[in-house]
Length: 185
Figure (cartoon, rainbow, N blue to C red):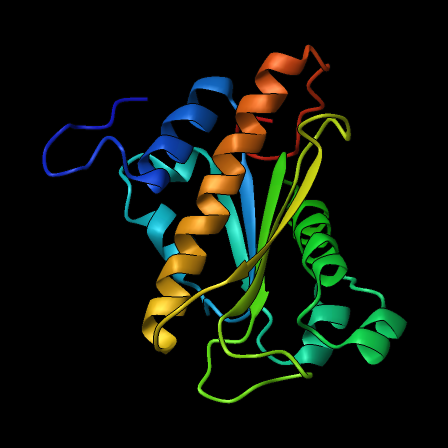
């Protein structure tokens, strides 16, 4: 895959995700709540994204996290949508449903008001990968400052950074790769 240098920032997380996954023949799918499609859009902005991006699901309404992504309904009822286990289940669900090697997810409170007892800026980002071991699953809790736009932008950076870290761990763990059903799968 050739990505023209042009105006692309080689340090930008989306560019690095596309290059790294493309080089490995792996795919990714995104489950988004508070980011509303921004993660998927960041990846689509990179030339060559079609070789790695399977798609994205914006499950903004809490019930959709269950019906579209398979998040446990009892978990959503007990803890609400802003929860680390919800984020992990979103990542696993989008990975499975879209046939990707990797799934990533965002859920949280962009503000200005609290949600599910969580303050504005509380965000969970998660990644679920193919090996279930060292690079298999990760979730990160964030307390982000700023307005809605700042929280959402920082959430995009955080989930892409977590994805990069997990893909890197997976590459060095020696775990066998389980291909997805994506175009390179």
